[in-house]
Image 1 (tube, protein in one colour):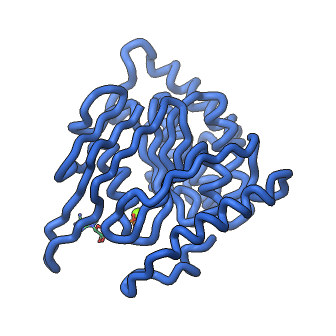
Image 2 (tube, helix red, strand yellow):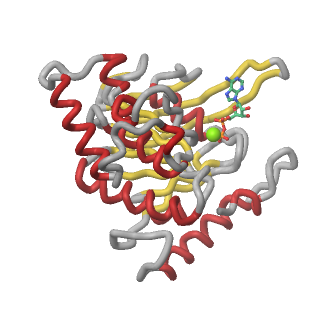
Amino acid sequence: MIRLDGVGQVFEGREGRVVALEEIDLHVKPNEFVTLIGRSGCGKSTLLRLIAGLLPPTSGAVSVAGEPVTRPRRDVSFMFQRPALLPWRSVLSNVMLPVEIDGGDGDRGRAAYRDRAHDLLDLVGLKGFERRLPYELSGGMQQRVSLCRSLIRDPQVMLMDEPFSALDALTRTELSEELQRIKMELATTIVFVTHSIEEAVVLADRVVVLTPRPGRLREVVDIDIPRPRSLGQNAHLTEVAQISGLLHGLLAEKSVDDLRPVDEVRP
Ligand SMILES: Nc1ncnc2c1ncn2[C@@H]1O[C@H](COP(=O)(O)OP(=O)(O)O)[C@@H](O)[C@H]1O
Ligand SMILES: [Mg+2]
């Protein structure tokens, strides 16, 4: 579904050249859930922007669904750490925003999208909140709205950049369970960036570990723990802890003084 072949990204900044990514070869299968971890500044967000078509790679090739990525695609959605809702629009019309900006698919009318928006809000437990304004909702509820917005056009691919990082632990646990449930229902391919190693393990079919600048693939770890999995109470805590320990070790391998200490990368 997603292919990166020999991808590199160099930024020419005011302080000189920054090699953000180097020689990235990564193939993500349809319906796969891949999480991406690495130290701050190692190029995780850059990698997502390359897949999203927001940035052309300085070397190598990126393709989605067999087509080279040259600009953003309608079937690829992006979700950020902040919900970024429009404060004057209701919950429902925030969810409908992508359809209004860019139109829907020809075969689905506006009314059908509204029904879809209602179903999605229902799915994340926000039934009855459709007419509320964002300020009336908690951070977790706002991020659920943002999740619905990124699902409104049935994306083939969802790119998620630390979407749960700003949430409290309990809300984060709930949302990571909901995301797994939604993914099982909707069959979509996800690339999910997180600072939390445990979150990366709990969510992923595969965890991709990047090295510090420049970001290279350090390791790709298959996670075979049965689903559903949880960050909270669950039967697989030992396995999650074992794999997390291994990943901590990989992340701690290289220390570069201008980067945050590994303790800060821990959840
Ligand atoms: N538009 C840009 N111009 C210059 N440098 C950038 C730009 N975007 C990112 N970088 C640099 O590229 C590196 C990787 O950034 P980023 O992908 O945001 O890292 P991460 O998301 O892993 O924290 C950092 O050193 C960052 O400063
Ligand atoms: Mg980032």
